Every structure is written in structure tokens, then in C-alpha cells.
Amino acid sequence: YASYNEIQKTQGFDLTKYASKRVKRWTYTVKNYPGYENASCIRANILVSDGMVIGGDICSVELNGFMQSFYYPTVTDTTVAPATTVCSQ
Image 1 (cartoon, one colour):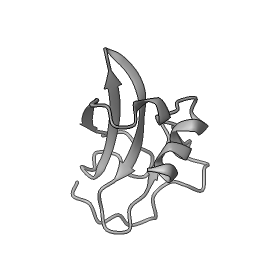
Image 2 (cartoon, rainbow, N blue to C red; image 1 turned 90 degrees about the horizontal axis):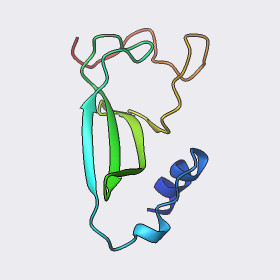
Image 3 (spheres, rainbow, N blue to C red; image 1 turned 180 degrees about the vertical axis):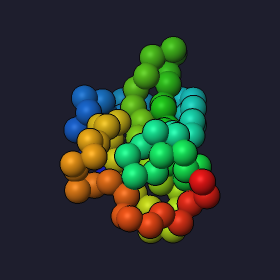
Image 4 (tube, rainbow, N blue to C red; image 1 turned 180 degrees about the horizontal axis):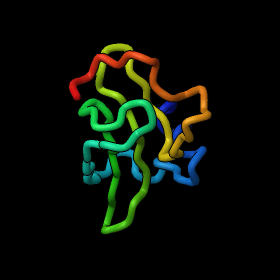
């Protein structure tokens, strides 16, 4: 979980104090991620403890997908999807 916590630290969270504790993970499908508009393979995972957001990520569940912080890319970013995506529309 160390590499996942590094993602959290880049966005101001630190999961260290939640080690071995039970938290809730809420997962939502993202329909407006640049390059994947209306696709069903982008997820937002939100970690919650005692009603407070303590971390999370944006990820692609497709083969060779990605995981990143909540940072929302612009269409000029190089991190957007390739010209062809394989997730369902």
C-alpha cells in the first residue's frame, strides 16, 4: 500500500494513521473523463472514515489502465486516453 499512499500524499491525504482500520470505499463511474467521455471504464474511488474523505483515486479498469489522484486533466494534458479506447461506450 506504500505506492498507493504516495498517490494520496500528492493530494494532501495520508493513509498511514488508517492502517488496520476499517474504512468505506465508494466507487462511481466517471462519464466525463477527457478522452473517455461516455465510456464505462473510468472509476472514482473515494475512501471515507467517520464521514470524512480520507483519500481516493481515479482509475481505468481496462487492460493496461491507469490509477492517479483526483487531479482532473485538461484536454491538453499528455495523460489523457489514447485515440482509441477499448472500454465500452
